[in-house]
Length: 106
Ligand SMILES: [Zn+2]
Ligand SMILES: [Zn+2]
Image (cartoon, rainbow, N blue to C red; front, side, top):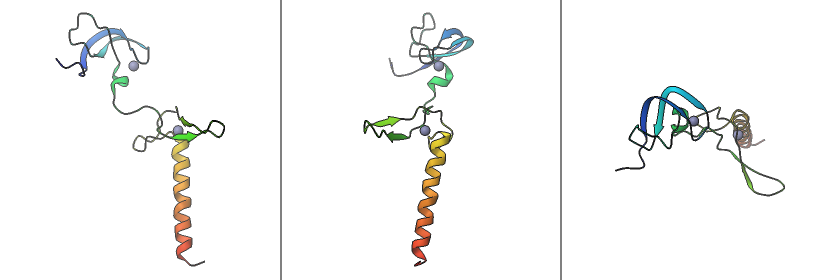
C-alpha cells in the first residue's frame, strides 16, 4: 500500500484541509483510498504541484533574513508574482544595456 498516493473521490462534500474552503459535489483528493471516511481531503487546486506563491526571496534590511514573497504567481514559468516579475525583467534589461555599452568602447 502506497500512502504517498493521492486518490480522487468524485462527488464529495468536503472541506479542504489546506485552504479550508467548502466544496459540494466536487472531486476531493485524499491519501485515503476507501471513500467511506475521508480524514484528509484536498481540493484540486491545492493538489496541484505547481507552487501558488512567488518564489522570490528578498533580504530584509533589518533582520538580514530572507523573506519569502507570498504574492500569487503571475508568471508561472518563472514562478514570480507580478511585481517581482517586473523587477527581475528591469534588472535583466539594465544588465543587457550595460553589456552593450561596454562593448562600444564608450
Ligand atoms: Zn484547497
Ligand atoms: Zn513576489
